[in-house]
Every structure is written in C-alpha cells, then in structure tokens.
Amino acid sequence: MLLSGPVTQNSSTAAEILKAYELYVTICPFRKMTNLCGSRTIARVADKAASVHIIDFGISYGFQWPCFIYRQSLRPGGPPRIRITGIELPQPGFRPAERIEETGRRLKRLADRMNVPFEYEAIAQKWETIQYEDLKIDRDRDEVIVVNCMYRLKNLPDDTVVQNSPRDAVLKLIKRINPDVFLHGVRNGSFNAPFFVTRFREALFHYSAYFDMLEANAPREDQERLVFEREMIGRDAMNVVACEGAERIERPETYKQWRMRSLRMGFRQIPLHQSVIKKVKSIKPDYHKDFIVDEDGQWLLLGWKGKIFHAISAWKPVQE
Image 1 (cartoon, rainbow, N blue to C red):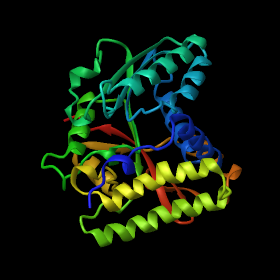
Image 2 (image 1 turned 30 degrees about the vertical axis):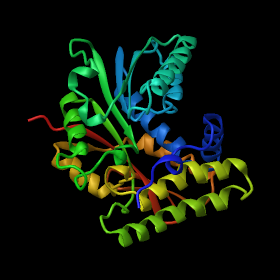
Image 3 (image 1 turned 135 degrees about the horizontal axis):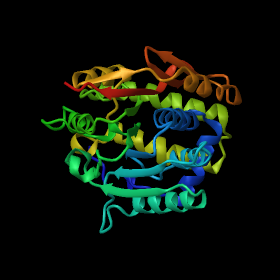
Image 4 (image 1 turned 180 degrees about the horizontal axis):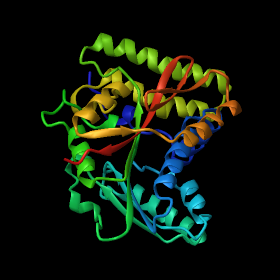
C-alpha cells in the first residue's frame, strides 16, 4: 500500500508544530545537546578565524544557529563574519525555497541586533544535484569552512532505491568542499530493511522507545505532546511501514553503517574535544535519569533506556 495526500501531510499549523517542538526540547535533552556539541565544536575550529562559512544540509528552521551567533558576538576581539548556506529539500508549490529564505531573514535580523556581520544563501533542491559552484566557496578568503548535517542524510534515497546513491553523491560533494570540519549527526536506526516484517519489527522497537520517553516526561492529555506524537513520530512511523520506493523517505542506517560509508568515501573521523563532551554531559542531570549520554569510539551517543537514538561525529576528508 502506498500513502499519499493527507496522511503524510501536516494537519497542524506551523505555530502548533513549533509549540510541540518547544515541549520536546523542554522534556528531552537531545536537541539541546546536539546544538551545543555542534556550536562548541565549530567555535573551537573557528577560534581565530576572521570569517566562517557554514554549509548546513537540512537547515529547516535554523534552530541551531541563534545560540552560535550570540556566542560569537561575545568573542574577545570581536565576532567573525558568519556566512551560512542553508540547504533544504524543495517544498511543493511555486516557492520551493520559501521556508528556508524566511529562516535566513530571521537569522539576519538576529545577527544585526548583535552586531555580527552576516550573510545567508538559500538552496532548495535535491541535494545530490547541488554542484560545488552553487556553494560560492571562496578559497582566496581567510575563511574557515564547516559542513553541518544533523540527522537528515537518512531522508536521501539509498542504494536500494536508485543505482547511483544520492548519499554517496552528497559525501563526494562534501569531500570536494574539503571543510575544516564536517559535523555529521546520525539518526541511529535499523528499520530500513527491504523485507517488510523485519522493518516493521525494528520500527516498532524504535518508535515505542520514543513513546515510552514521552510517557515518562509529559502528561498524556498535553496538547503539545499529542501534536508531537502525531506530526513528528506518527508521520515518520507511518512512512516507514506504509510506503515503498521513492515514497519512503525514512531510511536511517546505524552509526556503524555510516562510519563504514564515510571511511569508504574518503573521510577520516576526528575526535570531538573532551571539553565539548564534558559540557554536553553536564546537561544530563537536568533531565530524567533514564536518558543516556555515552561514547563509542569517537561517536557521542544519545538515547533512552538502552536504545540509542542519535550519534554525533566529526570528520575531515582525506586528500590524496
């Protein structure tokens, strides 16, 4: 059975979804930890830089960047010039880039208030079709280049859907960019099996852990929780079990699979700085005791009751 139309579309307004997201951030530390890990890592890499160019695959509403801009505004000696290239999949309709253009305007207003020099470029197209030239990288400028992709490469078609893997195409592009650091957050999941029963079983295990986390941290009758369950978890779960081929956009891999793919594509993993990991772990006591913050190799793992939901890593291309 293939689903299209109302089931896979938002039935809530943007304001309701933002309120639900606010609840999620309040009860669950994952987004706060992710943003802090990314922002602090970039700040370390760009410590003395006059200019920072952040290429963000999957920028969406740009929630990650206000705190980063604020912290850079306080940098001793003055803030760097910040340039963000916000990349998203195109929205349906006549204005495919409307949402991420609005994200750019919001970030620009914020940067202006904080006296941080800021530029923004929006790109809304299939990621595997983006060319190096589209990114306007200026090698002559003293500029630190950062590629950021948090939990979104799972939405690209994988090797089972199309012959030339869009995931590999994006990694090839990132390798050509040759950033000072590539920050990659992985939604850790093993429910991308081609066999339905295996996929259903793994999805049930994965999403029931999410519902368990919400049950322990938010009242059942909470309206924001209901919206979050329906629009975020429910829609993803429905896509996993009811859609096939190009219509199934939830195709996560485990962080160990992503590690092998990244090594194969010519990247080397670099450790996240211990001061950053320590700062991330310091957030945990403010939340429920069953949240997990752990390390495996050079990955930072975030989860709930033994189930790992997210894994964060840092990479650099190996230049032959």
